[in-house]
Image 1 (cartoon, rainbow, N blue to C red):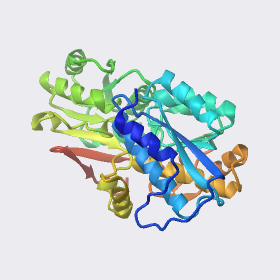
Image 2 (image 1 turned 90 degrees about the vertical axis):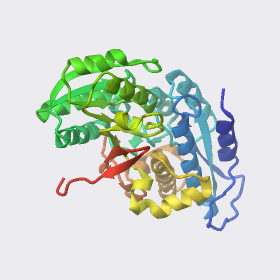
Image 3 (image 1 turned 30 degrees about the horizontal axis):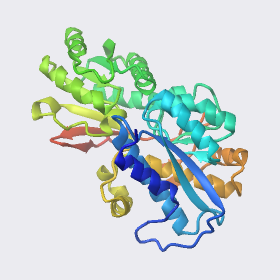
Length: 381
């Protein structure tokens, strides 16, 4: 079932009505429509992230329509709920294809995005994947899949480098058995071995379990002094609590799927001590995104969180490609996306031949009370 908030989002984004703050609206013919499709979790435990992504993508669409649309045509965002569930995602992807979308611009949980690859590929729909970044997305070697975020391999190298900088000598890696967390965990183990950081254990927890005491005890027995959890925030919160209750007093790192969301809710000062996260774009921690954040706040009514910039950029990459292609012929648009060289909110966007982003960036965050601060990257890194 779609929640009330999610249903309101669905109605808002498919209406095609511009609502950008200071931008003067320009009339766009209603008959000529360019449809973009986005699959994100609007139900389930990751729904806050999905709703924020829809808000950001809608803002990008509204801004384009307020300027006259694209090639004189109104842009419409068609939203599907994948609930971060593979089966739900497949059904929703087929629905989007049936609505004649030109480009898919969604993707939050890799486990839900991966099974949609073949559906969009068969329909000839190129994918600008906003947030999912598992290397499983690149495994089929489709030339129509493009990732806005850096892959798990790049994030793993970043995490291992920081684990060593934080004086870690023995690493425990924990994942939840789904696509993105598993590939990030495996990449982290490989990176740690290359960089001479000992790996005490690689452990898998069950999503939605009421306790992770068994995992915490295994971490402590293994003698780890740093833990990297690569799954999502719903489980991360409980894992952190159980680690501290079982006496783990080392540093805890979480991947970008856990820093995105209410990770710190319910954690006390002792539990959140020495808690870090590897993340992508956090607007409120980046002065260079102040103006964009103010625009988002004015339109949406709340601060932009993680995943919002990437969702906004995915829409603009797609629209930029449609402009350069001169229309919505899917093969022409695919070629144009492959040739993208766009200055976006997340930085310069261009793609490697395999569809990965050429210049991904990551941030290290440090828990401070009920919020995160950004840890400066050492000069020369």
